[in-house]
Image (tube, rainbow, N blue to C red; front, side, top):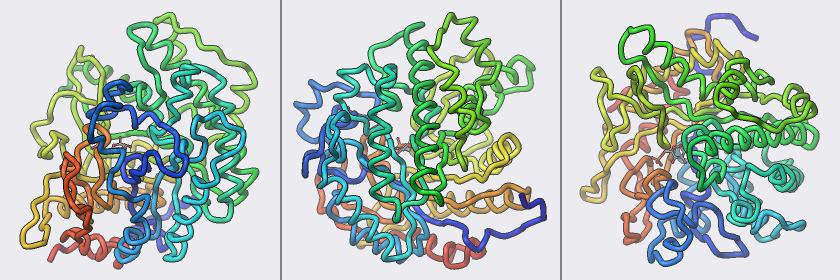
Length: 472
Ligand code: BG6
């Protein structure tokens, strides 16, 4: 561990961008792909409704931005910005259409071979999320999803297949996206549907345990098959502050935060913390687990901590804990500006979070999602987006301050470098990209790509390794 004062991004800092298969690829039913959770959602990830989905004419995530076919031209644009890393997920159902086949779908595997080859051609390292809300619908409907231990076996067969296939191409892996969102949105993270009250809490923690076992097994397997790989734990860690200094408010806020950090406590420290046993005890939660599970979890912790950070909020005494794709939802903070979608912009909170996580875990951190969803206007074929550039500058500055504070950061992937379908609302108009995609919320448009002003700004940041943040 390096305890020396550092005031620069490391030479090998991984600058890049992040997407998820279900939000960009489209091609939802081609080349043997099976149906995944997102294909049966309407109006956003919380809208799982197979019947309605089957009758909905335009399903944004079914066609998305057609990255399935356009990846060569899109990757060329990423390379023009100087990307060192590109994060995407694999669509589980392209490879195992129902999740329980013995043999994988070769066409699905080939697709990702081509995608990785294209990245490697430009010296862009792939960073792969193994499961980003794309779980096979069959596993949800037939087995009740992650509540059922059988899922571990199916998931590990998928992992083994992709580790063996891509061992020479992919060294950075993350078994699950935002696993701690199980506590807020278990529907799309773990396929937990139709539960309420105590039953829901029971299902959340049982499914989480099964996913912890799956994660630890995936870490073990990945290290065996790809000895020079690194396997990250990935969480949603936008932050929450106490709304005032009433000690009760402060304690509740810590408790809320700890419900998320719990996931890191298990996967990174390697054991269940006492506070969670207390929570289970007081809520009559009983988790089926074996001593072998606990041993596996202890011996196979993750190599780095990846996380998304978009915003902060505040907690008031007695407020219920809940959230969405961006993090917890509490009371707005009067000191912060708010995005077009009501997300409060807080770069200092980013520095705070980086310090918080480093102090707690002392393993390399990797912010793999940070970005601004905003409305863009095309004028004379150009998109001027100073708001996005401001957000980027402020968050890169915060990251640099955290590095000076002593935090070890591996890289930074902006969410998402190209406009894509929003996960929470299925809108195209919630644009994160440095690259504009000509497509509206109803699916109209040419899908033509246009470089926004922020495209050149991110290029400048990467070219100078985070030193030149001047906006022209
Ligand atoms: C994260 C997800 O929770 O938030 C992404 O990992 C998602 O899939 C991102 O896109 C931003 O949320 P939204 O709803 O604006 O797309």
